[in-house]
Image (cartoon, rainbow, N blue to C red; front, side, top):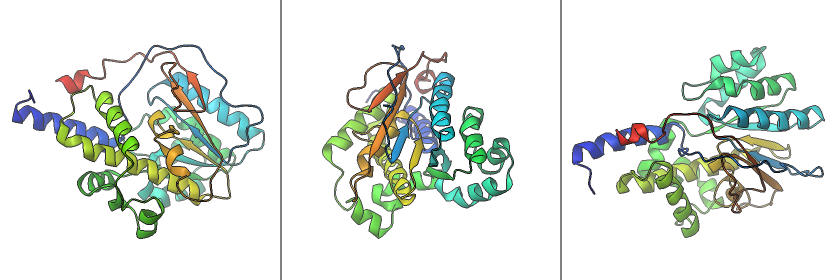
Length: 282
């Protein structure tokens, strides 16, 4: 490896902070044309709605899709990656006491997200009395998983249900590893990759587990595109446990390559941003 030891440690620390914060890769491509998001006849029990975290257009389009379905009578629970699961009690109290989304954000939101992009979804939940479910790992959870493996953040029954006492399927680990390495500018020290894959997989399984716990109520997941993938993300883990659920995944992407990752995609104009690899290269 061409890094000096000191440079490697500095890079490792910065990248580890990033993955513990969000677990999501850096990315962005040139936009293509839009595709239909949901068939008119869609009645899936679980709707997985992705995002490029900083793409404002994607947030607006996703909100409109959700608003139209809710105002037509749909009453799902809303699982959000943006809230850490350990703060569910705080989030519950905020939903009961707050009159608007800004209050919920101040009480239960953390410092890692651009909350104004999520304001409309949170306000929609308040207006229509839809439960908000905290879906993400905390930094402490993620650190433990990086150190001790995927099963370290789950109880014995979940370990059994999701077969976490066995090695991850090779296809899942390989695909997640490729996404993580590419998403971190191909500059990730090899010693970090395995732990970061474990943290990403643990997030996906937790979201799948929390979605299942809302049943028989329908559920929508608000999360990054990597999480809503049906081949390696939450969509995969949802149906590793019986009974099978009907799941529909929508990717909101800066690009046009679906490649079996989602049931449909909404392509977006690329958000203007600094080179996401600049900080890593430093």
